[in-house]
Length: 168
Image 1 (cartoon, one colour):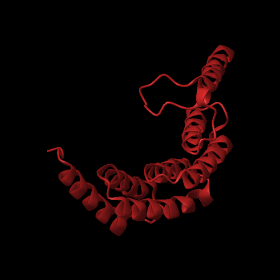
Image 2: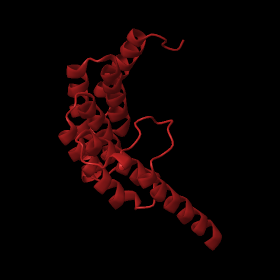
Image 3: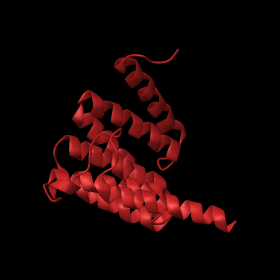
């Protein structure tokens, strides 16, 4: 059945990571996803040292995928930055988010969800350092309405998609 407790989830993910490490190349995106999933579980549980070790392993591996030019690297950078934010290291989180943003712009273009998300993540790190004016600070809840600075980005992406459909 499905894992219901945190301990069961950790055991199942740990087993998946063990098998992936044995059977998949270090830079295989599936292996990287399993490792980041286990790291995220450790982060949620507050076992920071384990989370950091796993995120760093995933980051090293993701950096080797397609010579550091992959969407998996964007994801891992954002996941690792979440750990930095959780422990209050906003400077490291900012660096990871800036790197993820630059990579997202380069790989998928400015008018994409990944870029809008990267801007939001960067804004959170900057707000944590007190480097955004109060009126521009992002809301940290994923359920909250996006702050005004990001509405423009989302609107531009939607308009771009509409324009693409109208051209066809």
